[in-house]
Length: 410
Image 1 (cartoon, rainbow, N blue to C red):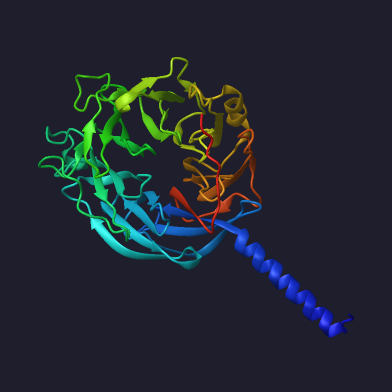
Image 2 (cartoon, one colour; image 1 turned 180 degrees about the vertical axis):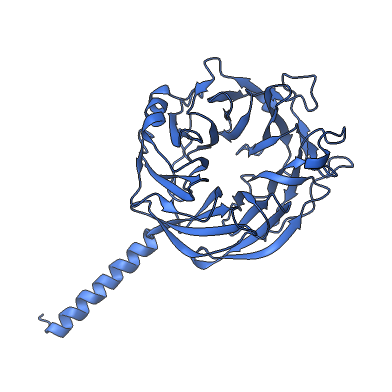
């Protein structure tokens, strides 16, 4: 059969349209939406980027919107990726956003913290998507002006139930309290994927020690302190260097990793029965100068640490049997992964687990890397770094489309 020129053009166009729609359905060019919280403006801002599937390059998807409060410092998404939660430190609030088409955000609820403590520093969602953990700098009635009082002896961990609609319920009770006490100067929070425990890092400059407070957790969010090795302190925490800055756990809930900002190192723990932490005997492990944050890729194979003073990202390969980070990848990463000025947050993209991003606080930028899934080595993404809103402080991604990331099991 022969086609005239018009028919040929129509056929080619139809085929191209079919191929394009098939490709888009199976492998959308945008694999993630990246949300950046910046705290230079008042109120704070949330900026949305599209993550390109092929290159990892970032393109702004929507105009920045208000974070709903002052000084946003931490973000978390629901496990169905329909909701974003933002902790605003300056206004002591948690703001819930609904995620719409094209990654658009709509503010749906605001919780002003009071009986749960105040001045949030970090939030994290449990794997089931049923609990939001909020770590506050101060317990109720305390503030910067009252930290010397006896009643202001530490921070507060609040546990909010999350409904199927994404709404936050009343905080889980701890006797007569609406929070669970932790030490002074809390910095980060991490929930085990198994849902059986949650950990909070703190530091006491007067004692010159850092700590990890561990809690066993029920599905309803009730917490019980896990006995550590500093039994003279409330909550019996585990020692964690001098000034822990970030905390992350392996995908199989067997190991916990904490960065020490003051001593330029990473402390690794085995997680024993009951959530007890036991430091690996061959640690701590060297990082760059002033490590600020830590993340583990979704496969549970690689660790990435942002170094605030060096403006770099350190890369580590995890020994899945022992939890030991490999020095070989770390050595390479310390010198070859430059970021913008003062990276304060780092993550691996949720959609593919192929790209690593840092939020660079002082030069208002996002740095991107492509992750070699065999070696963990990083290489810069195209056209980076990417200009961002002022003083980016937190990052979170949600996948766009259906993707599968293989999780290796030890």
